[in-house]
Amino acid sequence: MSDISYAAPKPILPFLAPLERGLAPLAEPLLRVTTGLLLVPHGAQKLFGWFGGYGLEATGQFFATKLGLPPALALVAGLIEFAGGLMLAAGLLTRPVAALVFGLMAVAVLQVHLGAGFFWTAGGYEYPLFWAVAALYFVLRGGGRASLDTVIGREF
Image 1 (tube, helix red, strand yellow):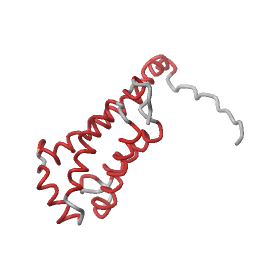
Image 2 (cartoon, one colour; image 1 turned 30 degrees about the vertical axis):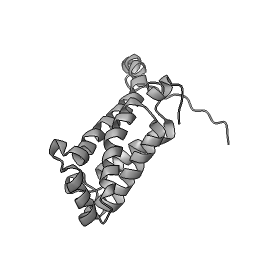
Image 3 (cartoon, one colour; image 1 turned 180 degrees about the horizontal axis):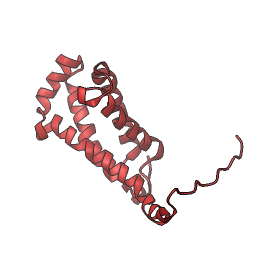
């Protein structure tokens, strides 16, 4: 491996550099919290029928009849999105939870959305692919300094 070092790029608008330096530490926790919290309502739809969802039984039937998946996977998917989303937002067990989210979204892309094309508005894979990549980021990086993993002094 070479020891190539790169100079930091000069800002296009230098007067914004202090603002950027001040806000930069918030970027990673903001992405983690947002990723987690935006998953929660999707899990609540599957588990409880909230937010226009169908609940666990109907979601299980959908998984079986339309996707050819075992109905029990509706519970697994709902728990990953609901409880996993809360845990990801808090930064608790960040890497394993993010790995579960990544796996769930990979299945969603391949089993559900790929045949509908790219755009989410047509049921395509754009949205679950984005969440898979966001989750993969936290698999690789962990929860960061502003996480419960850091508070308890343990990263899994």
